[in-house]
Length: 255
Image (tube, rainbow, N blue to C red; front, top):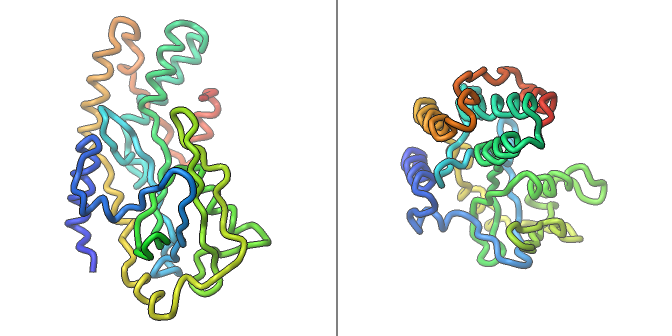
């Protein structure tokens, strides 16, 4: 059985180390090959009360990853700062030198969606954690609403999923990723039982960042921005509390 408290501590250690970490822990994650990799997305152990995925949002600050407190309905000073930046960008104009500079800064602190899933790594048939961004996760969700497929996580009648990673320049492209054409069982009855017994607690991976720590980093950012943008971050208008936060950003014409 997974020791959740130990896992959380290790996860925080890795995310706060700028990319280093314990190789035993990292081995639990699925590492994508360039080209084609095949996985089987597994269902949740308690499908009635849990999704097969865990959703979070990551701020990348000072070369470290921080789970946004808004993921668990908390207040986030980074999102507040991001919101204020875009208010100012719209006020001074996107095409002005200051506006362009602020847009670059805003993009650096913007939270980005991340999704965790339990998968069978078809290279060795072990259960790994697959961490993906919004586009690749969308490819997985598409299957559920495609009449040719359906619930690809079904152990008996689901589909293996081909991840096609094609790195073009700086960023990988996953447009060709898709389920295999034919449905199949994930494994034998005995293998499926083992897969479900070895599921990782993907929801336990999400430990939101400390508000005061994030606030301190935003104050440092404010200090660095003095001179060119003396009042941008100081106003600290709170980002909307409603679930419609993205709609508010849309109103600000955020790119």
